[in-house]
Amino acid sequence: MDPALLREREAFKKRAMATPTVEKKAKPDRPQPPPISDDAKRKMRPPTAPKLDASSYKTMSGSSQYRFGVLAKIVKFMRTRHQDGDDHPLQIEEILDETNQLDIGQSVKNWLSGEALNNNPKIEVSPCGTKFSFKPVYKIKDGKTLMRLLKQHDLKGLGGILMEDVQESLPHCEKVLKNRAAEILFIIRPIDKKKILFYNDRTANFSVDDEFQKLWRSATVDAMDDAKIDEYLEKQGIRSMQDHGLKKPVPKRKKAANKKRQFKKPRDNEHLADVLEIYEDNTLTLKGVNPT
Image (cartoon, rainbow, N blue to C red; front, top):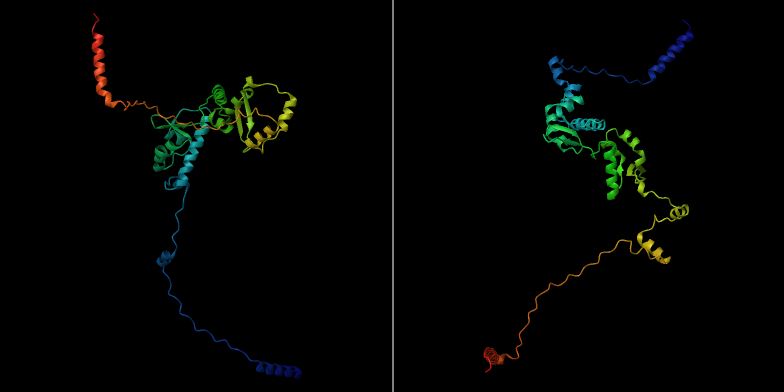
């Protein structure tokens, strides 16, 4: 063997002996737990929730959200049915059949027929109490009844009618409004962009001079109240608007009750009362005697 390799081997051993080392002691073996039986494993498993299918969910009667979902579906169906021209009342079984909800629980059905449909403002109950129909905002069936309603609102100063209320109340609304477009005014309300219907009174149509229109549109009174308008008119020497405003009620004075006056007898001649009686008796006797 090469002596150089032997010298390197001896030097490596010396370095290894000089380097301190830490020995790891082997840990004693822990006792293993006894094996768990199958019955114990079953008991240790957490209980699993039962699976819910569509049929079991629909028959659950304790969920208020489910109940009101059934009611909302019925009201929507009754509204659509009324808008299509079908206004004859239906029984609760017929309504559930039309809405494909025959699989609901008996408690939900009793709640619908006994409480929910009776108290709903959009549902009208028949006199017999077992049939239901849609209750619109206005009782209008065709174009004639619509124009009569708009005319009554115009004459009484009630204003217009919301487009959404007419669409809900009038069957085949789009067709009727198209045929009556010349007799109705459509105004969009700037606050909420809702469309309002007014009666188009052709007798009130008149032509306005262009110069007057320019003057009218140039006068802006949006930011002025009645007091400022009155002050401006007084400065311009205009007093014709004083009698057209709201008059303040003048409190009326209460008249005193008319009491009957009691005339008091004079007390100055009380000491002559006997003399007066004698005088009255003498005058009566003298009137009854004829002169000879």
